[in-house]
Amino acid sequence: MSDADKHRARIFLHRGQLAQAKVAYEQAVTDDRLVNDQRALSDSLGNLGNVCALSGDLRRAESCYREVLKIQRMEQNKHAIAHTLVNLGNLHIGAGHPEKARPYYLEALDLLRDLKDDRALGILYNNLALQEAREGKWEQAVTSFTQALDSHRIVGNEEGLAVTYSQLGKCFLDQGDLTRAERCLNNASEHYIKLGNEPAEAAVLRHLAAIYDSRRDSVSARRCLERVVSLDQRYGLPDLHADLAHLVKLK
Image (tube, rainbow, N blue to C red; front, side, top):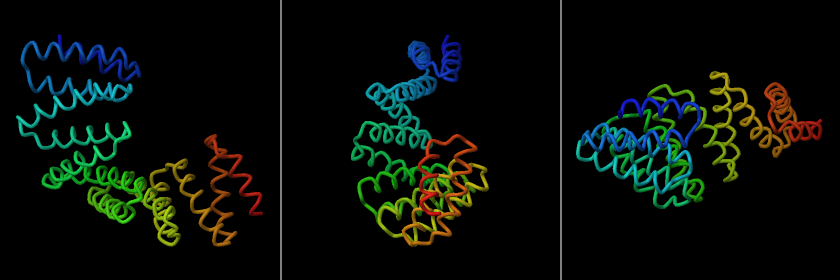
């Protein structure tokens, strides 16, 4: 029965039917407990936790993840433990308790460094950096963003590089460090061009236009905004009117 319930849950989840997916995973958990299959139970509980997190039931999600973590620690599955620790950290961020998230993230970092899992490390360093930036811990944030970039480069994660350069650029922009912000945002733009992600490129170019505008470099600012407006029109982006107004002002 458990496999059938899990199959149904995956179908419901794919369709975005979270309530039905939750019921199916709950039944899978019950079935796994009856046969005392700890590995299967860990999998079912983890998926149930994910569905609860997606549907906003953070307390239930945390309960699931904690039970999963207990099973994984007994099995000494370091990769799985790190993944669950990150999930617990993300839950506390989502619940508005970042101070509770950090210990989970730091324990996961230790495990992932030992495992040399640079793909996961890049994502986790980025999560840490974003939280540090929100708290105004600029030096720590820059260090974490830089470590994220190093990990992304090792595994060739273009998407990770684009996102992290963009966020690091915004971090420098918030500090008023326009030179380093410009450098990072240009890097982000180049990576988004490689990826063909034009809406994300537009978001980066808006920040660059603001930098050039503040320097009274109207030629560069106008060039950025002309590209942004063309992307706004192509993809129906919501900032079209504001971008057009900014461009008209520059002209």
